[in-house]
Image (tube, rainbow, N blue to C red; front, side, top):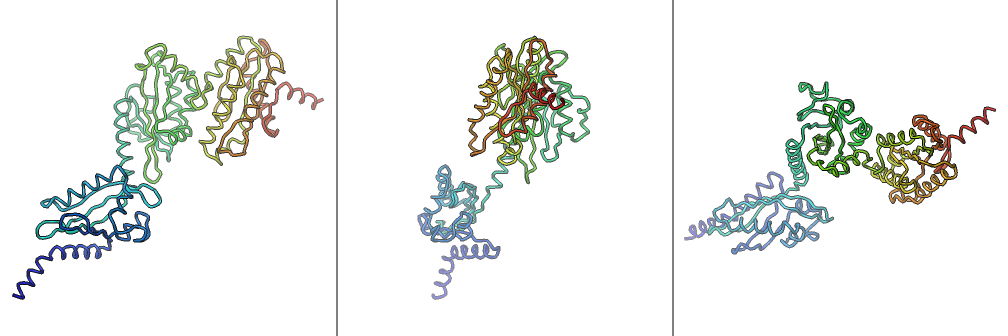
Length: 464
């Protein structure tokens, strides 16, 4: 009788032995599981969170993160809380299932940082099949989840580009090289050899621009497709897009490129670049005109780009009208970029361009030469005092320019200017004369202007 009772007692406690053997196995593997003990109705009677789980959540001890389900539920993302409980209930109630709880969810650490966790638990049961305990492990899978999401997003990007774009290239941002992914239609000479794995990025782009791009858009596209510009733009926006014109068999067509950064492991980023014909979406005259304006505009600052600005300035000078031509250069712009970052530098460029547009008249020609250099041609300005007023108005606007990140540091510019009368000059000559004056202005503190006539007169005096 005594022996029978002892045997029955061991039989009834098999589920307890199962739990203890699982805990022992975890200990042998140097893992620290958490566990929940359940009553016969399957409701949680006790939670025992392991120290390792608490620490993954950013909590130090039991006082910080008590042994209760409420402690955990308070940290679970609102959108995942019901799903977690539903998965838990299904696992507990499935007497014939695999007795396994498996859930991926978002959880907030003590400091508020959101992380992705993966929890897996084994359910031990009583002889009648009712759940007795869940013993499990939880792992922070945030980095793996983010990498998986990036890979999925990148796959979708490549898939979409392969359908929509005729030509697709991959740019290695560390090696500064480009490789061909897809090549359809026109092939730039010497770059269609599929046996070659990659090409230097800069000559690849310059060759494409020279062979294919409409002459008036070439200067603009050289800047927009420059490696440095692509690097900056793809860090600040999901998709870097630009429209331009190409010549194909003597006909002008509208094209668009899209650059998208694909973040790689260990900082080995790549940028995928797609090129496509967009004639179909600019069929109406209004759309074509809008795209023409876009192709003539500096995308960042909204003033004219160099190619179109110089074209209009040359035409204005050749028309025989008098005026003033000036070139301006930002002071200490490299230091601003190096100290505060390119994003702040971009804000300065945009701000100065806005000051130029406000200071000069609608009939004047304002354009960006590239980098931190701008130019303006004031048509019809005959008197020096009128030219001085334009420059002074511009300086006053620059003085009030507010860039919060620069704090108390002001923005200043150096200007070189030259007056010209009816039919007296060529644009190339005016450009050289104004450019030479910029360096003279750099010698002065703060915003300053030097007129070529004054500099030439001072030089004559020195020689005499």
